[in-house]
Length: 179
Image (cartoon, rainbow, N blue to C red):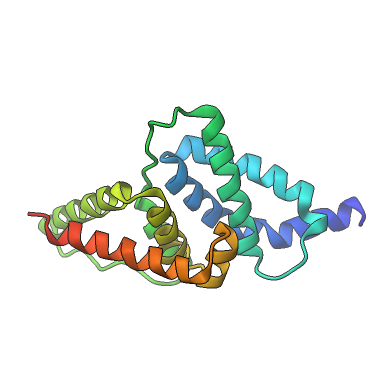
């Protein structure tokens, strides 16, 4: 393929999904600055491998690269004792991108309650064991199918479903027990 054809293919395959890539990287790395570094590295890898892209779900292909790049980046740049925590602000961005919106706030009290709920949910997601948190983020926030998550993580589809069910149950237990 010519350089021009590769650039056009990169623009078609990768660029539409950069927002989702950044959101996933933020969930995995725990902050926006590190996520930007990861997505930049992932884009370089995607550009290098664009000629080998065989078609199919380009979003899942890019998010797989972002996931793998995130873990490689974190293993080089972070001690193992640091836990990744996502940013629930990504939910607003993703809701807007998919044409949905979060409930309107009726006033300062509703706004304060929503912020407290968001903080509690973020903390509960952060407390999940890594395999459960990763599966939950990929399915419920990034909207990937069970099959796509299975291929991305290299586990059986039943394992994906089991992890997702356990993650959701852990969240319900944690949030249900909150004061």
